[in-house]
Length: 283
DNA sequence: AAAGTAACCTGCCCGC
DNA sequence: TGCGGGCAGGTTACTT
Image (cartoon, rainbow, N blue to C red):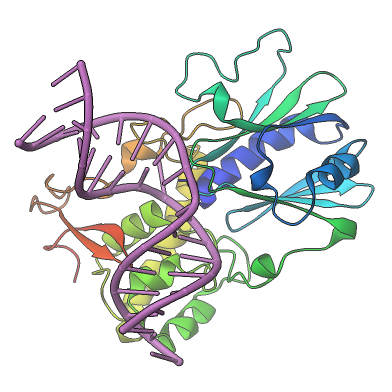
Protein backbone atom coordinates (compact mmCIF):
# COMPACT_ATOMS: atom_id res chain seq x y z
CA UNK A 1 0.00 0.00 0.00
CA UNK A 2 2.04 2.89 1.24
CA UNK A 3 4.25 4.67 -1.24
CA UNK A 4 6.38 7.74 -0.67
CA UNK A 5 3.49 10.21 -0.15
CA UNK A 6 1.78 8.00 2.42
CA UNK A 7 5.01 7.33 4.30
CA UNK A 8 5.84 11.04 4.26
CA UNK A 9 2.34 11.95 5.49
CA UNK A 10 2.64 9.56 8.41
CA UNK A 11 6.16 10.85 9.10
CA UNK A 12 4.97 14.45 9.28
CA UNK A 13 2.08 13.53 11.55
CA UNK A 14 4.30 11.61 13.95
CA UNK A 15 6.95 14.33 13.92
CA UNK A 16 4.44 16.77 15.42
CA UNK A 17 3.63 14.41 18.25
CA UNK A 18 6.51 12.23 19.34
CA UNK A 19 9.77 14.14 18.91
CA UNK A 20 11.51 14.35 22.26
CA UNK A 21 9.28 11.75 23.86
CA UNK A 22 10.81 8.90 25.82
CA UNK A 23 9.68 5.30 25.34
CA UNK A 24 8.84 3.78 28.70
CA UNK A 25 7.22 0.50 27.66
CA UNK A 26 6.94 -1.68 24.57
CA UNK A 27 4.23 -4.20 23.89
CA UNK A 28 5.13 -6.78 21.26
CA UNK A 29 2.27 -8.95 20.08
CA UNK A 30 3.99 -10.18 16.95
CA UNK A 31 7.72 -10.61 17.09
CA UNK A 32 8.10 -11.87 13.51
CA UNK A 33 8.17 -8.32 12.18
CA UNK A 34 11.43 -7.64 13.99
CA UNK A 35 14.14 -8.67 11.59
CA UNK A 36 17.63 -8.27 12.94
CA UNK A 37 17.57 -8.64 16.69
CA UNK A 38 15.92 -10.67 19.43
CA UNK A 39 12.66 -9.45 20.93
CA UNK A 40 14.35 -9.17 24.28
CA UNK A 41 17.16 -7.00 22.98
CA UNK A 42 14.70 -4.97 20.91
CA UNK A 43 12.66 -3.95 23.91
CA UNK A 44 15.49 -3.59 26.36
CA UNK A 45 17.40 -1.22 24.06
CA UNK A 46 14.29 0.78 23.16
CA UNK A 47 13.09 1.19 26.72
CA UNK A 48 14.44 4.51 27.99
CA UNK A 49 15.33 5.75 24.50
CA UNK A 50 13.74 8.90 23.24
CA UNK A 51 12.85 9.92 19.70
CA UNK A 52 15.26 12.55 18.51
CA UNK A 53 14.23 12.77 14.89
CA UNK A 54 12.12 10.98 12.27
CA UNK A 55 13.58 10.72 8.80
CA UNK A 56 12.34 9.07 5.63
CA UNK A 57 14.30 7.44 2.81
CA UNK A 58 12.13 6.13 -0.02
CA UNK A 59 9.44 4.09 1.71
CA UNK A 60 11.53 3.56 4.88
CA UNK A 61 11.12 5.37 8.18
CA UNK A 62 14.26 6.04 10.17
CA UNK A 63 13.52 6.91 13.77
CA UNK A 64 16.70 8.43 15.16
CA UNK A 65 16.84 7.66 18.85
CA UNK A 66 18.74 9.12 21.76
CA UNK A 67 21.18 8.05 22.97
CA UNK A 68 22.26 5.97 19.99
CA UNK A 69 20.09 3.52 18.02
CA UNK A 70 18.08 3.75 14.78
CA UNK A 71 14.62 2.22 14.54
CA UNK A 72 13.85 1.40 10.91
CA UNK A 73 10.31 0.63 9.74
CA UNK A 74 9.02 -0.44 6.33
CA UNK A 75 5.23 -0.66 6.06
CA UNK A 76 5.02 -3.36 3.37
CA UNK A 77 1.58 -3.50 1.75
CA UNK A 78 -0.71 -2.74 4.65
CA UNK A 79 1.25 -1.26 7.52
CA UNK A 80 0.29 1.99 9.24
CA UNK A 81 1.60 3.80 12.31
CA UNK A 82 -1.01 5.42 14.51
CA UNK A 83 -0.46 7.94 17.26
CA UNK A 84 -2.92 7.92 20.15
CA UNK A 85 -3.05 10.06 23.26
CA UNK A 86 -6.30 8.82 24.74
CA UNK A 87 -5.16 6.23 27.28
CA UNK A 88 -8.68 5.48 28.48
CA UNK A 89 -9.87 4.19 25.16
CA UNK A 90 -8.82 0.65 24.39
CA UNK A 91 -9.76 0.63 20.71
CA UNK A 92 -6.90 1.27 18.29
CA UNK A 93 -9.04 3.47 16.13
CA UNK A 94 -12.78 3.53 16.61
CA UNK A 95 -15.04 3.98 13.56
CA UNK A 96 -12.38 2.84 11.10
CA UNK A 97 -11.69 -0.41 9.32
CA UNK A 98 -8.40 -0.72 11.18
CA UNK A 99 -8.74 -3.68 13.52
CA UNK A 100 -7.20 -3.77 16.95
CA UNK A 101 -6.13 -7.38 16.54
CA UNK A 102 -3.66 -6.20 13.91
CA UNK A 103 -1.83 -3.96 16.33
CA UNK A 104 1.52 -5.73 16.47
CA UNK A 105 3.85 -3.42 18.34
CA UNK A 106 2.92 -0.57 20.67
CA UNK A 107 5.46 1.98 21.90
CA UNK A 108 4.28 3.71 25.08
CA UNK A 109 5.60 7.17 26.00
CA UNK A 110 5.92 8.64 29.46
CA UNK A 111 2.86 10.88 29.00
CA UNK A 112 0.72 7.77 28.31
CA UNK A 113 0.48 8.52 24.61
CA UNK A 114 1.56 5.78 22.26
CA UNK A 115 2.64 4.87 18.75
CA UNK A 116 0.95 1.79 17.31
CA UNK A 117 2.29 -0.35 14.48
CA UNK A 118 -0.75 -1.95 12.80
CA UNK A 119 -0.48 -4.24 9.78
CA UNK A 120 -3.17 -6.64 8.49
CA UNK A 121 -1.02 -8.57 6.08
CA UNK A 122 2.20 -8.41 8.08
CA UNK A 123 4.49 -7.76 5.13
CA UNK A 124 6.01 -4.87 7.06
CA UNK A 125 9.47 -5.09 8.60
CA UNK A 126 11.16 -3.53 11.59
CA UNK A 127 14.85 -3.30 12.45
CA UNK A 128 16.67 -1.85 15.43
CA UNK A 129 20.16 -0.83 14.41
CA UNK A 130 22.72 -0.20 17.08
CA UNK A 131 24.86 2.90 17.36
CA UNK A 132 23.50 4.86 14.42
CA UNK A 133 24.10 2.10 11.87
CA UNK A 134 21.96 1.85 8.76
CA UNK A 135 20.80 -0.96 6.47
CA UNK A 136 22.35 -2.18 3.19
CA UNK A 137 18.93 -2.06 1.52
CA UNK A 138 18.63 1.60 2.47
CA UNK A 139 22.19 2.36 1.37
CA UNK A 140 21.46 0.94 -2.05
CA UNK A 141 18.31 2.97 -2.68
CA UNK A 142 18.26 5.26 -5.69
CA UNK A 143 17.46 8.95 -5.92
CA UNK A 144 15.16 10.61 -3.44
CA UNK A 145 12.72 11.93 -6.05
CA UNK A 146 12.02 15.21 -4.27
CA UNK A 147 15.64 15.77 -3.27
CA UNK A 148 17.99 18.31 -4.82
CA UNK A 149 20.33 15.63 -6.19
CA UNK A 150 17.59 14.23 -8.40
CA UNK A 151 18.16 16.50 -11.38
CA UNK A 152 16.77 16.00 -14.86
CA UNK A 153 20.28 15.36 -16.16
CA UNK A 154 20.85 12.54 -13.70
CA UNK A 155 17.42 11.05 -14.46
CA UNK A 156 17.96 11.17 -18.21
CA UNK A 157 21.40 9.63 -17.80
CA UNK A 158 19.94 6.70 -15.86
CA UNK A 159 17.20 6.19 -18.44
CA UNK A 160 19.64 6.05 -21.32
CA UNK A 161 21.58 3.17 -19.86
CA UNK A 162 18.48 1.18 -18.84
CA UNK A 163 17.09 -1.51 -21.14
CA UNK A 164 13.89 -2.26 -19.23
CA UNK A 165 10.43 -0.80 -19.69
CA UNK A 166 9.81 2.58 -18.10
CA UNK A 167 7.25 1.34 -15.59
CA UNK A 168 9.64 -1.23 -14.14
CA UNK A 169 12.31 1.46 -14.13
CA UNK A 170 10.17 3.85 -12.10
CA UNK A 171 9.18 1.17 -9.60
CA UNK A 172 12.72 -0.11 -9.11
CA UNK A 173 13.78 1.39 -5.78
CA UNK A 174 17.42 1.30 -6.85
CA UNK A 175 16.70 3.90 -9.53
CA UNK A 176 14.29 6.18 -7.69
CA UNK A 177 13.15 5.47 -4.14
CA UNK A 178 9.50 5.69 -3.17
CA UNK A 179 7.43 5.22 -6.32
CA UNK A 180 4.98 2.31 -6.15
CA UNK A 181 2.19 1.05 -8.36
CA UNK A 182 -0.34 3.85 -7.98
CA UNK A 183 2.05 6.71 -8.64
CA UNK A 184 3.92 4.91 -11.45
CA UNK A 185 0.61 4.50 -13.29
CA UNK A 186 -0.37 8.12 -12.75
CA UNK A 187 3.03 9.53 -13.72
CA UNK A 188 3.04 7.66 -17.02
CA UNK A 189 -0.53 8.57 -17.87
CA UNK A 190 0.01 12.28 -17.30
CA UNK A 191 3.24 12.07 -19.30
CA UNK A 192 1.47 10.37 -22.21
CA UNK A 193 3.98 7.51 -22.18
CA UNK A 194 3.09 3.85 -22.64
CA UNK A 195 4.35 1.86 -19.63
CA UNK A 196 6.03 -0.74 -21.84
CA UNK A 197 8.27 1.78 -23.63
CA UNK A 198 11.93 0.92 -23.19
CA UNK A 199 13.61 3.42 -20.89
CA UNK A 200 16.48 4.01 -23.32
CA UNK A 201 14.06 4.75 -26.17
CA UNK A 202 12.59 7.83 -24.51
CA UNK A 203 13.37 11.17 -26.09
CA UNK A 204 14.69 14.16 -24.18
CA UNK A 205 11.23 15.75 -24.15
CA UNK A 206 9.46 12.55 -23.11
CA UNK A 207 11.96 12.06 -20.29
CA UNK A 208 11.41 15.65 -19.22
CA UNK A 209 7.66 15.08 -18.94
CA UNK A 210 8.18 11.99 -16.81
CA UNK A 211 10.71 13.78 -14.61
CA UNK A 212 8.44 16.78 -14.00
CA UNK A 213 5.34 14.66 -13.45
CA UNK A 214 7.18 12.43 -10.99
CA UNK A 215 8.05 15.40 -8.83
CA UNK A 216 4.73 17.21 -9.26
CA UNK A 217 2.54 14.18 -8.58
CA UNK A 218 4.51 13.09 -5.51
CA UNK A 219 4.49 16.64 -4.14
CA UNK A 220 0.78 17.05 -4.77
CA UNK A 221 0.03 13.65 -3.24
CA UNK A 222 1.90 14.63 -0.08
CA UNK A 223 -0.08 17.88 0.10
CA UNK A 224 -3.29 15.87 -0.13
CA UNK A 225 -2.18 13.43 2.57
CA UNK A 226 -1.57 10.46 0.26
CA UNK A 227 -4.03 8.04 -1.32
CA UNK A 228 -6.76 6.25 0.60
CA UNK A 229 -8.53 3.81 -1.72
CA UNK A 230 -12.08 2.60 -1.18
CA UNK A 231 -11.00 -0.11 1.22
CA UNK A 232 -9.75 2.64 3.57
CA UNK A 233 -6.79 0.55 4.64
CA UNK A 234 -4.48 3.55 4.53
CA UNK A 235 -4.89 6.18 7.22
CA UNK A 236 -2.37 8.69 8.54
CA UNK A 237 -1.01 8.70 12.07
CA UNK A 238 -4.08 10.54 13.30
CA UNK A 239 -6.50 8.15 11.58
CA UNK A 240 -7.29 10.55 8.74
CA UNK A 241 -7.80 9.54 5.10
CA UNK A 242 -5.67 10.93 2.30
CA UNK A 243 -7.49 12.63 -0.56
CA UNK A 244 -5.16 12.15 -3.53
CA UNK A 245 -7.45 9.28 -4.58
CA UNK A 246 -9.99 11.84 -5.76
CA UNK A 247 -7.54 13.12 -8.35
CA UNK A 248 -6.41 9.71 -9.61
CA UNK A 249 -6.74 9.42 -13.40
CA UNK A 250 -6.12 5.75 -14.26
CA UNK A 251 -5.11 3.57 -11.31
CA UNK A 252 -7.86 1.03 -10.62
CA UNK A 253 -10.07 2.44 -13.38
CA UNK A 254 -10.06 -0.31 -16.01
CA UNK A 255 -12.99 0.11 -18.40
CA UNK A 256 -13.78 3.67 -17.33
CA UNK A 257 -13.38 6.36 -19.93
CA UNK A 258 -10.09 8.20 -20.23
CA UNK A 259 -10.47 11.65 -18.68
CA UNK A 260 -8.66 13.17 -21.68
CA UNK A 261 -9.84 11.29 -24.79
CA UNK A 262 -12.82 9.25 -23.57
CA UNK A 263 -11.46 5.92 -24.81
CA UNK A 264 -11.90 3.03 -22.34
CA UNK A 265 -8.89 2.57 -20.07
CA UNK A 266 -7.06 -0.75 -20.36
CA UNK A 267 -5.25 -2.99 -17.90
CA UNK A 268 -2.12 -5.03 -18.57
CA UNK A 269 0.34 -6.86 -16.31
CA UNK A 270 3.91 -5.67 -15.95
CA UNK A 271 6.12 -7.57 -13.52
CA UNK A 272 2.91 -9.19 -12.30
CA UNK A 273 1.48 -5.85 -11.23
CA UNK A 274 -1.72 -4.37 -12.63
CA UNK A 275 -0.92 -1.53 -14.97
CA UNK A 276 -3.64 0.87 -16.11
CA UNK A 277 -3.31 2.93 -19.24
CA UNK A 278 -5.12 4.82 -21.95
CA UNK A 279 -4.44 3.24 -25.35
CA UNK A 280 -5.24 6.55 -27.00
CA UNK A 281 -3.11 8.92 -24.93
CA UNK A 282 -0.08 6.83 -24.00
CA UNK A 283 2.36 6.17 -26.83
C1' DA B 1 22.30 -12.89 -16.91
C1' DA B 2 17.68 -11.30 -17.53
C1' DA B 3 12.97 -12.48 -16.82
C1' DG B 4 9.33 -14.84 -14.97
C1' DT B 5 7.07 -16.92 -10.84
C1' DA B 6 6.18 -18.05 -6.15
C1' DA B 7 6.17 -16.72 -1.61
C1' DC B 8 5.09 -14.03 2.39
C1' DC B 9 -0.37 -12.75 4.69
C1' DT B 10 -5.39 -11.30 5.47
C1' DG B 11 -9.56 -9.70 3.67
C1' DC B 12 -12.75 -8.44 0.31
C1' DC B 13 -15.38 -9.02 -3.86
C1' DC B 14 -17.33 -11.65 -7.49
C1' DG B 15 -19.42 -15.51 -9.83
C1' DC B 16 -21.49 -19.85 -9.45
C1' DT C 1 -25.38 -19.01 2.23
C1' DG C 2 -21.09 -20.65 1.05
C1' DC C 3 -17.11 -21.84 -1.40
C1' DG C 4 -13.34 -20.95 -4.63
C1' DG C 5 -10.69 -17.81 -7.31
C1' DG C 6 -8.66 -13.59 -8.00
C1' DC C 7 -7.10 -9.44 -6.43
C1' DA C 8 -4.69 -5.70 -3.28
C1' DG C 9 -0.53 0.33 -2.10
C1' DG C 10 5.71 -4.27 -1.62
C1' DT C 11 9.73 -6.93 -1.72
C1' DT C 12 12.66 -10.95 -2.09
C1' DA C 13 14.07 -15.55 -3.27
C1' DC C 14 14.06 -18.93 -6.28
C1' DT C 15 13.41 -20.74 -11.08
C1' DT C 16 14.11 -21.05 -15.95
